[in-house]
Length: 147
Length: 147
DNA sequence: GTTCCTGCAAAATTTTTGCATCAGT
DNA sequence: ACTGATGCAAAAATTTTGCAGGAAC
Image (cartoon, rainbow over all chains, first blue to last red; front, side):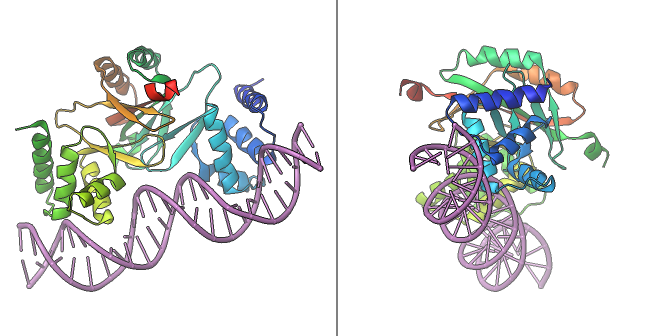
């Protein structure tokens, strides 16, 4: 069982537990998210599924993402362009963050255990019940530095 | 000279250096940002200035924010609701981050030197020229935990 | 006087919602 | 059958853009 299968199964299980009925549109969104290795926008998901011959309504994409986000199965963040980006959250909590090129908008994922430790630690002294976090670095990618 | 005066002056100086002409709308936005202690949305800025009797066009708010952001005088981030939030960036680079309540959207700023150190360190091994960063924690605020 | 800023209105985007219909249970 | 998911279209909200008039230099 691959990593993505693990997440898609987990997501479907949680949805079933919460009393959701299954449907083709949300299944397609879940399957798509399960095989991405970085965040995608709702519009990208919609277009990609359309190209694959599994066209679904854009409203269903948003409704699926909303449901998955409410159940903390997907993480939402904004790379700085006002377009929401979504990605699967592994059940174990392992996850990555993003560096965004301010010129070409290219996004690179990265992970850093020390960063996670520091955030977990500072979360303890904040009076909120912390459920998650996003870190977005901004800068110029190697290609744009050359230019 | 207060902290906010320092930033507004700095911002105006940078704009002048870069060849911008001065104008009432952008002045109002800069003055407003200079006296906020946390991030505000473009719409909030527009409405607040209107209430103060200094109504300016919403387009000018966006154009001012865009110019200030390009010059790295303001930082933009998204609390998770798809509405961009902007705040002044101190010349020295000192800054804070945000915790957002997923239920009531209340935002609390916080700062953590250890977090800054870890981010500066990991930025070294990323092939981007890092210019800034945002950290957004998500959770439930004290009031929403009670409810 | 020339250039840049501003405001208004229109447009473009992203996201949400109403409603009829269809699929899952 | 009943409930919930889906698609389409309309609407809402945010942000961008064109253009004419006015302020800054």
